[in-house]
Length: 118
Image (cartoon, rainbow, N blue to C red):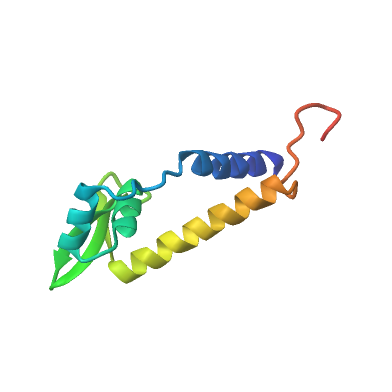
């Protein structure tokens, strides 16, 4: 991995950490919508923050989002059932937490800002 790729990766990790938003707690609107869809309020808000919206398909709850296919101008719809989206969001949250912990402990990458290095 080159230094520019490393800098880009670190920047993305920091941006995701800065943009991470905790779902509102005890919101009546969120609680009502979550009950309607049959999912937890946390899952509903977290999925919506990541660009997913809930849909019922064949009697099951799916979370869908528009996904651009590389090399195409036509967006397609990516849908995951509630169990899969919960797993994906949980893994993303774990990865974000590990990255933040590593940076706080000084185990992050060194990005030289001058000729002298780090």
